[in-house]
Length: 367
Image (tube, rainbow, N blue to C red; front, side):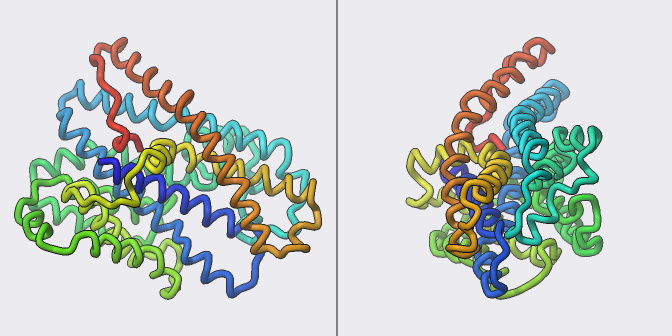
């Protein structure tokens, strides 16, 4: 399913774009442009896709004790090597530059990051563990991913037992998110629904699949993608609005179902480069923020009049070009030398624990 891997890469790059163009304080009208770069929808795609591919992997390997033990070891070694690397890079930035070089043109969004009261061993350790979005602000999504990775095996097992009845579980989790309104730590209550819906997409759905194959699927995928991009631009709601999460998650699920279950082929999602961007998307997502912060301070130090000279919008695009190019290169190295070696190390541990030699998941199953 190369299209799904490419989708992951595009979503990661949208997050990079959204963060870079939001770095400097810009006029109010520019908020419309920033909302068109819907980073929140990208996160929702990540969550549904994780639920989908992890459930497929669990169903293929089974739910026995050995298989589940192997699953948790694989997730541990899939997530943490790259997270530790990115956290170390972020810590170097915070320790060396952040509190020493002022950012006179920083947006309010940026000034709210890296709270000085959290520069403590406890908060730093929690950041490395993926439990706190201090060193790397987007790590709140990694916390959501970790929690749902722990919970996903029993959820996927329940789905295989209930099949059609699992829809009631998905509906209940949707209702939970609306009732709690994102009030749990890092809005966990909203995103249980995303992962569960991803699991539901793996169920045997012969009638649904037969019906969908009669539809103009490429048009539907394109329309769903367009709505994901533009809705927040014109329907202004809080970023963690539960109803918007439901709406966008259903659109994301429609795209993933079309690509992953119905075999829809999209030319824009095919090709070795875009698939490679998908391969390295996890490192892109983790590394881009500290890289962006390093470049922002470099702009202030080496070209102190740049933002005044060209304006915050153009400066944001300069920051974007620098960050994107460097992040892709760094993520490629991280994937090759950190992520893949982490997977290999996890497989060696599986053998040492007597859980058998388990092959690394297919690329699309790396989340």
